[in-house]
Length: 178
Image (cartoon, rainbow, N blue to C red; front, side):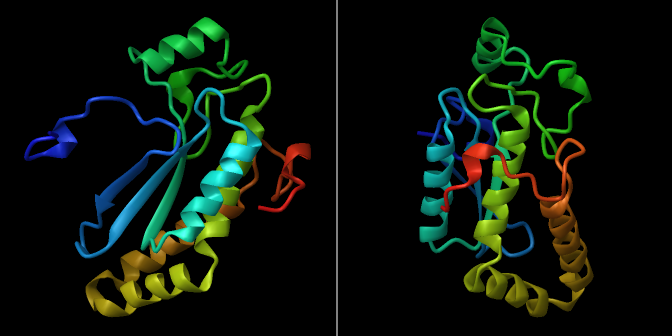
């Protein structure tokens, strides 16, 4: 039983396939969905499955995050023990919404960043999510400017270069369609 305040009662870290549902602060009827990619054992195929599954759900908003090994957690200890920290990157210097400290032998940091952005683009740039966003824009004049700013930030983030590479980095493992 998570109790009256589930935000204060976390019993385990997110696992592959977990869906985290939050309520939009300005639109409580809108669910915000967070999906985590990049947990140990993740593959390009499991990421594609996550994207496909997310696209099959009637979601209002979906966010895709790369797993973050926070100090003191079992995941952090596993990352240290297995040498999965990105070479030359200090944990405290990375904005986990923009990049990752993870660098698996089979799924490099650049690939994780590519798939995170691809997941967002594939989910968001479809008619349903676009209509939801437009409805939110038009539903409340007070939030119109804020919604435009957030939309522009997401567009900028989704198209931003990954680790100095081209605007769209497509690793060799990304060639198959989702």
